[in-house]
Image (tube, rainbow, N blue to C red):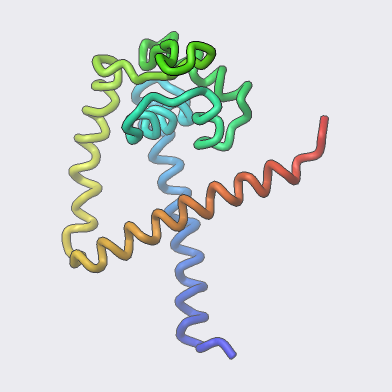
Length: 159
């Protein structure tokens, strides 16, 4: 039998999660609009700059849940905008790496840094243990999202 308080907390968390995710999607759209980019392009730049090394289009597709064709079009848009460059992989000349262009990405990073200072204030009253719990939750959420993306992709009906 489920504890009534826990059931109520799960229900409240479910409602707040939907609001949080919707607010983030709308925030991402506002950032993209401000920069003149597509929201997926903004998130791809975020992922690219969070990684220590350049990525292949296949890796970008895997990270975003896009097909390789859609990921290629995304990289094409970012390349046309000067945000990324395609370079041959020095260890495997058959592969092409997608590398952020620091000077162009600096425009996006400056906006993220400016907005991020305000976002960080919501974490100021949390203890280090609470911050570690939030990080753990976000990592698990990221892993779950990737597995759910794969699950949904496997359910697609062939054209």
